[in-house]
Image 1: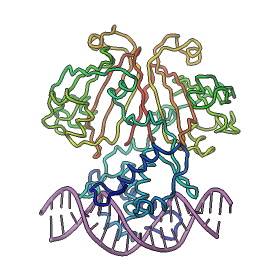
Image 2 (image 1 turned 180 degrees about the vertical axis):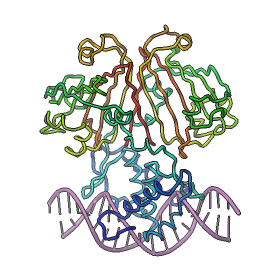
Image 3 (image 1 turned 30 degrees about the horizontal axis):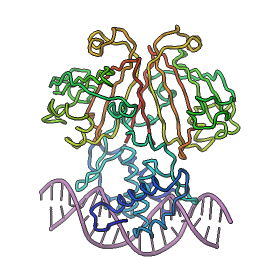
Image 4 (image 1 turned 60 degrees about the vertical axis):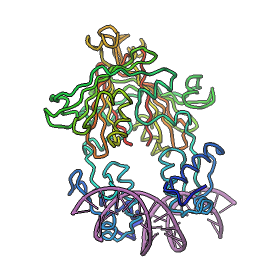
Length: 241
Length: 241
DNA sequence: GAGTGGTCTAGACCACGGT
DNA sequence: CCGTGGTCTAGACCACTCC
């Protein structure tokens, strides 16, 4: 059940056990066994139990009531797998559409006033500019232009960008953990240049989205401006406190 | 500095001390004193120090690096006060506009198929229906219709709804803590009925927003559908992991 | 090797909810 | 009153970073 020689921390093993238990044998709002019972059942200290529960509570699996006990939360499990941050790829899959991304432009440019402000860098510093077209079932849905500070992503290549989602590159290739995302939604019309790429008429109402992504040191590691077609695109997101 | 006879938990007192220290004397990315030093300086156990730091880390004040130390995060302090969830009132104030809310309709109705699905209740259960017009500097910006399950909010009155923001009523009058919010953005055009209320022409592009708010037991306690004028409205939000 | 954060223990007392 | 979660202690060993 719990292996004390395993290099995986006990509280993580315990979390996994408890999540399995909840998913397989428990109902929403059902009372769980007490911290002291978990402690003796798994032969770990109550401190370790509490550490495990603390994170399960944050993740929305359980809630606690002082003097009463710990209870299974009732989150819709099918939605629970959706990440808290937005992912075009994940969302399209979740509504049964086949997502595809075309990298239209990958270039190294010198930042202008606007970009340097958005990225919090000095005017003139080099940035990667990546323009991508995102399609669902081969229908163009969204046009994105992303700017990434060059010094945070040395050796970034077009090949890498084409190989996997940006968020995966952040975490796996550059150890950049996303801590904060600021987003801005507005309604706008589409420019002529954009209209051609996304195959719509100029002036069609569309959804504008701007996003700044911060790492743990709170540097902006990405600024993206997107235009999505207003007639077919719904942006869904979930906040968890 | 820390008062062990104070009923406020030590780790909370410690958090407050550390936040003051950070705000007054420290710079972003500056290294803080080690956990063991905090422990001896404030005469509390290292476990207590770690509990205090754990929450400061979640709140975005600090970040840690194993083997290196704990560092002050660099979040833009002016933005840090913005709540993670959206508030029309707060956002309007933050951009220097005077917000006002008019409650147009307050009624108790029987839920239809759509509303009962959105609220996760049985068809026909009673719900409050609240229609509000939101203005900034007396210009109509957004029209909101909210549905609240009657049994979660007994004795809810029009007077109370007019007196303060809904989120405040949830937490202060009904002890409903918001745990999860699902939102959906899309572009749409405005209906004739809505157009009259928000003083726009029928068919003007606008931003549609639907929101479900969940409490700690993961019951839906609010479903709101909003229409915001597309030409003047920007929806900003921040996610914190 | 010294210092840091990460994990873990065994045990204590308190505050709250229900019997 | 008892059982629950909430707070707190003193101390141990590990893993990582840097000199």
